[in-house]
Length: 490
Image (tube, rainbow, N blue to C red):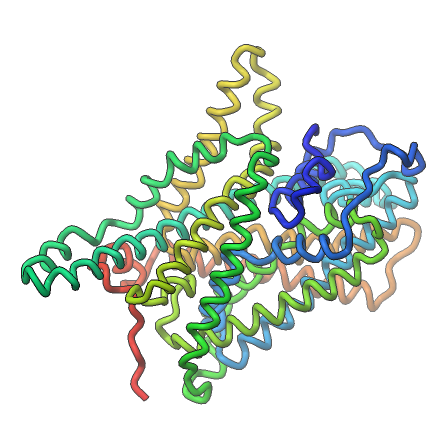
């Protein structure tokens, strides 16, 4: 891969820095470089502070905004506690992955490995002949889930953008209608008829713009946009906290624990939010001081867990049973600051679409273009990119509910990458002797928890998609005023 982490290092803080090395390990076809080769040609690496910034940006996104609904699906007491425990388990799995990568790299005297290569090499070093023969399959399996996860993120972005843009457009029109009605009494009635476009139409309107955005094949060209997007996201979160802290309800009036049937929705949303394990090894491989990775994980993920639990709890306390798939959808459109939150966060997500799309495109496009004549490769490249974007749009159109698409992506793909693969790799990484009983029990328990979450989360989400409730359907066709939350009686 020509696009390296070092080539975009001066744009630290931007999304493309964590995605580019992820792409390098996803390819898995490059020649191994001996760790002792010519140190003058090795990259200088990123600093500890830059690593923390990348780790924060890799975990803060649309999943964060869906956590208040996740707490509702678990309960005001069980939700935050479960979110904290899940965060601890996910961070532990990140440590497992880093340690396993170190072990296999040191044994083979190879350069630091990525996620899929760590899994494949660990299987190759296993004492089991069956695992050794399946090493190639293991690499492709991890890459498959990486692609599935990134395309799932893109589908979530389609729904998020459509929902928020719909609110901004209808809110602006509604506010202008209210002002005009003082002069022309019929204006508000005409405006009511003009609004209420189907949510899926907004996704179709967004499609050509996103296709053009994904035609940018060098992420270095997006450095400025990505930096602005990060700033927009930070300002949006600050405004969200300012709003929800103005009116926090009594937690004793909310259920302490929800029903067992709703908990799988919590699992899918929570694990989607913690899906930052894909950037851990690329960051570790590019640090100037790789031994400080555990410290960076503890500090960075500790801050992220505090942010997650705080926003999830306060958001649920503020909007109670009215909480939606993204807390931005609960902000009423009678204030310019609330509208600004939706615009800024939507811009950030729009730019992030191209960054998230980079991984699956670079995994899937080169093999296809390699089979086509050179004169047609450019056309084939752009056509396949457009086709993949259309695929994510179709998925969003078929599942036009943000809470469900987040839960589905989290349960299906994120659970495998974050909870199932790391503990199993740790067990395989003991080639000459069986793992200690405590480690065996711990790893099997984490993997079983992830697998059960995968099954239950996928089942309840698909059931809700196939047999939706009335509330989910009415959100697709409305009169433009549904965004304003209703106040529960005291």
